[in-house]
Image (cartoon, rainbow, N blue to C red):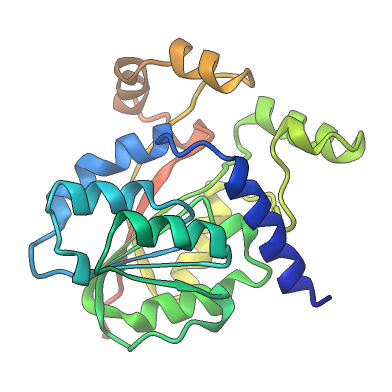
Length: 241
């Protein structure tokens, strides 16, 4: 069986079991996205999963369904999003082989996805191509400048304990500095970041209880976002000189 098909089956099984609750990084993304979107904009999320953010955009009428697009390799995830946003454009596909019209989107989301790309640079360059001249990319990922999570990540691999960090078929270790370099090389300018998840490793529900939004905002105010585990990073398409 081709490796891509095996990965897709892994994600199908994952989404059959996975909760559809929103994550902390999505909760901090939503105010940013609400301010950035205009009614005429077109939005695409690559690696959209169960579409928590896309469903919010549709339910709050920030955009009409026809202006919302999502792509994921899991047919199970895409079937779910289609059922929730009738009239949207949702496709099962490999992000390394996007077939989207150049310049057709104003905003792209790449949330918790870059670390799962076999070859990130071709995908990032394609994202730059499909964005309009004033296009925006919002991206989040596990930032392993957060040392406690890095230790757990390494141990999960060494001790064959993938459930400790929900280790996925492709799961690269990156830092904010690596990701910023990737995006600059792909033709983007870094604009800002919002840190989420500063707490040390602990069960998900306890973590959300121990780090309320007010604490996250306070840590961001003093500029610690580079040390958060799941920063939300905003990049703008670089204008040709």
